[in-house]
Length: 172
Image (cartoon, rainbow, N blue to C red; front, side, top):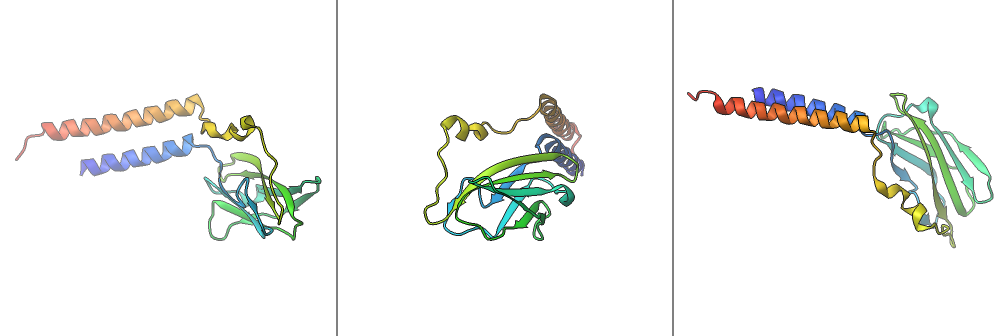
């Protein structure tokens, strides 16, 4: 019974630590960043790592001539962590999606990405230094890293203590 209690407590601690460590961020987009396809998209769908405050969500599309279209995002009816926005008819070409959202915990994040569509669509080439900027992984603050290490150390210590206690108890 004690093992179940310790494991439940450890799971809760790890869940809380992960929520504090991992930044609120975009985890999926449709159309996908850097995609090239034949037909115009009918919607923009963005999925995040936490619930989104719909009143603070903003999405816009900018074409290669600089014309910007402001879209009306709403919470995705199939996923509370996502927003969708209908896209009006577009001419073939390259488009940049700019988005800004706030999580239900009031943490804000924004970003941009590019896609293209049409019979002769292609994206401009980027230097390797620009293409690989996102490959470094998550940027976690030192304070959050120390907090995660402490939680993991406490969980490990609790499991070892429980193992020691159960091994040294008299057997009936």
